[in-house]
Length: 374
Length: 122
Image (cartoon, rainbow over all chains, first blue to last red; front, top):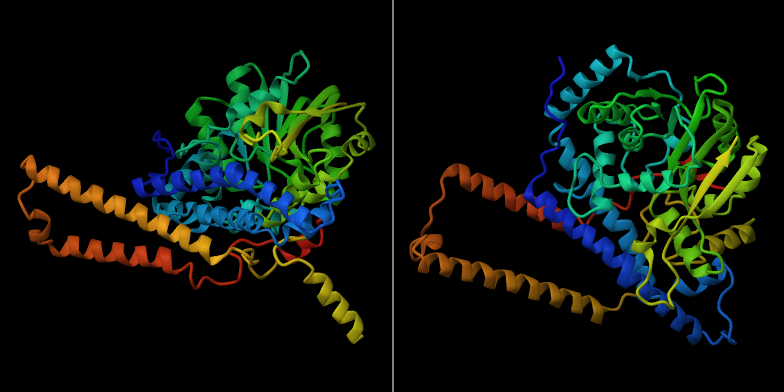
């Protein structure tokens, strides 16, 4: 018998205060420190006596300069270690804090999952084979990744919550507007069958169903702990969806099944060598005219400094496929997968948080919308 | 053979702070050029923060005394029971662990990118 109590990590005041502090520290890195780092980089380059009115043209040339710039070193240190504090700090790191409540949370989550399995809304496949690019990477410094511990889904959810907003909304609803921003780019039409491609704990599915309750929505992911949580959160929200544990490269849906598939921040999690097969598979399950849409970080053109720091984030924050993702020719790879129309355009809805106060400093991050039609 | 090994070593040590690949089995070091004047500046700023907190707590005690919410010297005269004493000592241990662990943390990253995945990045 599943409980009707929400599945909730009871955070302490100290935990919340600590994460408010980390959130502020991260904000400082992304704003003031980033701008100072850029100005220090410019001064360092000028001091090297090589300017001749030019600035570095490549990431390699930028790296030669920033390697010795203290502001950039501090930027890198904070990128690595504030995130480590977030997940792994003693007592207040998300992993340790949530796992102190495992005696209560794991049985509750498992009871809910059993209910989901019985109802058929949740399908787990213990025999699923994790691809190496998923199994061997502790993405964004989440120790052990998303699939090894029963509460990894809750840890990830909390990680998202403390990133997207001040405070610690344990339901992780803070990032839902991101999905709505993406959905604005959908061509007008009726999207009956919808696939959340890499659903994680199901925030995209819930957002879609809140706005389109008539749709039949499927959330697919490799990580069972995330899918169990997705079912639990869907139940709390009063929505019904189909959650299943599958490798996106080998989906069990029929050909031409979906009208729409969407994703958020997924492309940089994929090993480049797997992309062609992954995109062929999503092409297979979409109906003719079906849409594959999502957003992803991209390089700012003509700004090797921003590009160097974006690459650095990939290496430092355990997002090892991010630098390759920035360099991928997606137009080509989607067309090779069989898609007839590939539209890639700037996605400025998230720019507020990344626009420097100094107009002379390049935006810290830039994003594109990928609207791909079968 | 020796020559190519030297070349490879030089290549991997090209940068001291910038990474050009995933973090492997050793935690990278970034802060090679942060100068001590600035470190002491941050330390003094933290001392200031702590003093402001001390002042705030002392003022709060005084206000509570004035309002007769607590008696004079109530804090100093307070005798904790065994349970409270244990909780406070445990808290002190956790406090020390949170701070001092940073000074001798392992160089092995707490989160990892496995070797095979490190070879899949391009």
